[in-house]
Amino acid sequence: MSSEDLYTPSGSEDKVSVKKSAFNGLVAGLIIIVGIAAFFAGSYTANLSSNQLTQEDLDQAMAKLELKLLQNRLPTEQAMPPVKISADDDPVIGDPNAPITIIEFSDFQCPFCARFHVQTLPSIYEEYIEQGKVKLVFRDFPIQNIHPNALPAAVAAECANEQGKFKDMHDILFETQSQWNKIETVAALSLFSQYASDMQMDQEKFESCIASGKYIEEIRKDLEDGRDYGVSGTPGFFVGNDEIGYVELKGAQPFESFKKIIDAQLGV
Image (cartoon, rainbow, N blue to C red; front, side, top):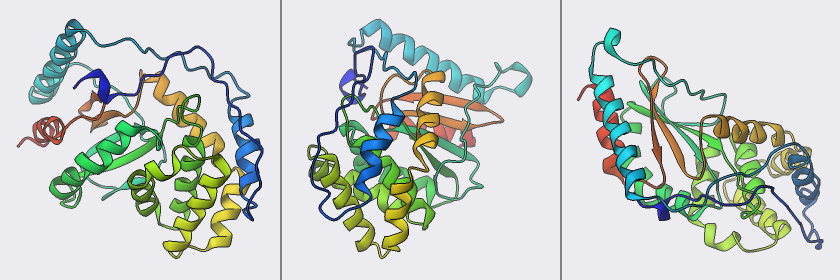
């Protein structure tokens, strides 16, 4: 993995400015102007490093990964205490009872997150998720100071989840990221609303959900939890379960990186 596969913004304080624009008939747009302000009215700061990874950093990361893999193969009494990561009550892709969990902290506007979901996730889905061996828990980590449409996209996905359409919205947001990542927030919301219509969602319920702002605090909690777990950029992954602990992977890793960890944890 190179540092180019992980979004690590710099800066000590998020500053968000949403331009005034016509709502174009979308009442739900109001909550984004109000909601973003509320989202950043708290104490959140993006003190995330933008330094380039050195070879020493990579070597240390590999050493830690190898140690964790070794620990997972040892008897329980010889293993180090597992890393505790909470899946919270976030959307799940796959069988909720799958033995291995991938907890992802992600940003819908992050290009490297899109790369993972377009290039790597399909292979994980085919080999593990469809077989009931792995589930993906999606936790939001919107880096709003550089991705102003990340929070609205996260809200849209949460609202789609209410109608059993999280994966559909999740997929289309990443697949069409280039269409909405540089447009004004209200225009992006209008596009998300069109996606919901194309998925045959209850349009009134979807837009009412967005306008209510009901998921702003949930998204903020995901972001704060991610920071507590040491997430410093997106995408960030934790692979495992509560019994054996979790192995951390940073960045848009290739399928082979996930496969090695998952197979070791499954005892393959």
